[in-house]
Structures are given as structure tokens and as C-alpha cells.
Amino acid sequence: MLTPRMPIVHTFPKLKYMRILLSSDMHRESANFDERRWNEFEKLLQDPHTFCIFAGDQFEMALSRSKSSPYESRMFPAEAKQWWIEHMKPYAKKCLCLIDGNHDYRVTRETSFYPLYDVALALGIETNYRSEAAFVDIGVGAWGGSGHHNEPVRYVFRVNHKAQNLVNYGTADGFDGIDVFVSGHTHKPMDKPLAKLCYDRYNRTITERSVENFVCGSYLQYGGYGERGGMRPTSQKNWAIILDGTKKSIRTEGFYL
Image (cartoon, rainbow, N blue to C red; front, top):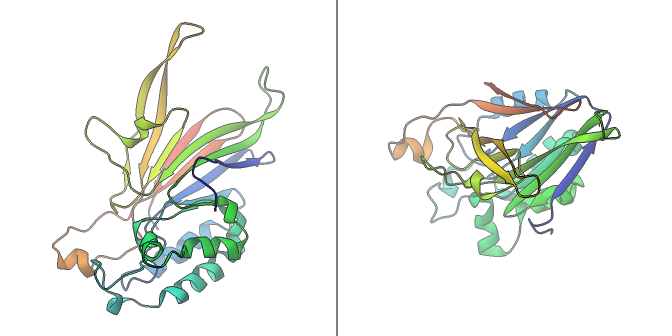
């Protein structure tokens, strides 16, 4: 397996734009997994310009001492792996990045096996897998601007499962050179763009740099240990990023499945 210090690099010179679906917290084996929403998600991947990033917890991986109970699971972990392989096989090349979440890592901690890595191997996209987190460098189109010699426009993502998002500080501030920060875990979708002033020591100029900062929601219906524990329902909103291949430009899209 590759270290998160090694970026995942993609280049799509023939595309004038890309739409990237940001997804997290599928929790496939859970009795509350919303398969209807997943089916709608799959339909979106049929578009030639649409791709996806998975930010962790694709599996539920319930253990006897976890909040979620293995006795309430819809399927065994081995069946969930097979389900992921079958459903993602037609779209394997659309998956630009997939990382583990805390649920996925439960099995690794107990057994040393990496279930999501097994899925990535079966799909032939193991180089797009990272366990802890990932930097994803994506080139789109062939920008003909002065001095660029028809090079693609490049965008850099940082993908974490867990992230601290406090009032005056966000995990995204811990990384220079990124355009988009993606996390999940909380099941509370959020779009919170950040900005920072950057000083160029060579030209003695100051520029303002913005970072799109997203928290993905989940693919769970309300219920289970969340309802049992009195947690409030969370929004089912989804996020997508549209990357322009003719100039450096990012558009964001919120939608419901």
C-alpha cells in the first residue's frame, strides 16, 4: 500500500470540465443504509464528465463492543466487500480516491486486514487507495493561456475522514497548496469556504487564497444507535465540485438524491 505522503495524480486532457461527487459514510452493512440513494448515486456516474471521491466509512464493520451492533447488520463484511466490487466495477476508473474511515479501520485494528484495499485491488485501482488520508492532484483540459503551453489546469484536494472544524480554526488550514478540503465522519454536511493571506517572499506581494472546505453527509436513514441515543436527524444533502479545464475555476454544487 502507498503512503499518504505520495499524492494520487490524475490527468484528463480531453475533458473541458469535470464534476466530482464528494461522498462519505456509506456504512454498507448497516440496517439503516439507504440503498435507494446509492442507486441514484450510481446513475450520476454514468455521465462521462462525472467522477467520485470516497472519504471513508464505506463499510459499517460493526463489532460487539462498537456503538453499532453486528446483530443488526444486513450482511457480513465479506458480502459487503463483494457488493462494493460488483457495484463499482462499471465505474472503477471514475473513482479518483478512496480512503479508510474509523469504521473501516476497526477490522484492520483487530485483524491487520484492510477491507477497502481488497476492494481497490479487485477493481484494479489500488494506486488510488490510501488508508489514513490522501492528497489528490487532478489535471483537467489543456489550458492555452500565455506561458502554459496547453498544459492542463491542476487542482489539489486533501481528503481526510475525520477533521476538526472549530469556530476560528479548520483542519484545512493545516495544508498549504490545496484548493479543496474534503472530510466526513460527522454525518453533518457542510460547505464552509476558508481563505488565507499568502506572502510571496520573492516578489514581496500578498495574495488571498481560498480553499473550498466540505464535510460530506452519510447514506444512512435515521434510526439505529443514533435514534436510540437521542441524536437529531441530519441533512441528506450531497456536494459536488465542478473543475474548469479552460481556466482555474471551481464551482460548487449542493443537491439531494
